[in-house]
Image 1 (spheres, rainbow, N blue to C red):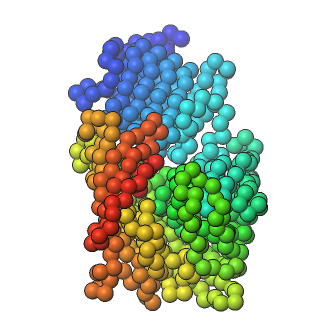
Image 2: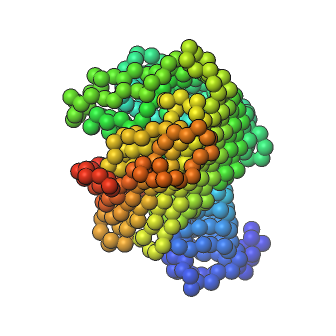
Length: 493
């Protein structure tokens, strides 16, 4: 004990400041004795720190190692942890939007020594239970066996209720994981679900082999708006912005999770079939409106290969500078029914880039490119127009085996307006067309007049979860159409 006290005395630095600033100089392994420390949102901590008896609040970036003994740690949504935070004898609260690219180590001393590590993408908001299975949580938040929402509501399934979501891996001690989900579609009166067997490999379990059997809904319209927001649109206004079909079958594949880069490839054999539209769908308003029909399809046995690659920078978030890219390739190997027999190829590329040009001023951009072979079925073709695509245009007013879409907005946040709301100026443009050539996105005179365009203004605010809520007012360009007003429960994209 005397040796430990002597070492602490040599390194002891007394301080009473409650935050770290650019003008403050720290030496390696500096100790803050009974004093709280705050790392502000614009600060990058590169020196190692020890905190005795005080708490740690992180809004900014941690590149080094911070050890907190006897104090609590609070990691907020703007935080980026590229280094390591060690908490001994205190509680750790981590916002679900925080970027955990390094490691958080928690050791509780009041029950002996209970140890927990939090890795990339495993942050749990408000979690104080040291027995959480961190890798299991990663899996369920991932794309091998994602945990479905308990309730969804749409024109095809009516109410989709998925109450059973189980995950077994011997308390996170096994490299093999069995996952199970089971639900019910009230519109068609049938059960749906998925069972997945996974095996984790490599350091930090960054590689996964998996096999899955399922009966589930599928759509190509996830980019338009979150499914929860679509459910609210169906419930309140009898509007549905997804086209869907049913897939029943199995898949085998592999996945890699390298922090900012994720890659997945799989072979799938399924029966694809139509899910009927429920015209008796109940809603608070517009109950007399007729729901649109599904795109034409027939029940088909399909075998296909699918590859997905996703990348995003550590700092990426809707109102921060960052880049996110997703590429998806699907090649149909076999499609057999009475009318279709040709294989097809479908490529989708989405890039989102945000630039915080000044405090409270953010430029946000999204580019979507879609390319498909001439034999692409009509229900897999790309559509332009409507919410989440080109505002103030009819839903999928253009369809084709090729598409291009651009969404841009200039956001003045609540920090800039110095009020309780933000202001958004936005511009949307897009085009869908048919071409016999797969890689055909070159502009020409025949397509120049087919671009759909709109512009508008939005007002919104952020709640405690960081979700954008507000109102948009959009006007189509080049057409004498009325101004469209919409209520949004999330960011435009």
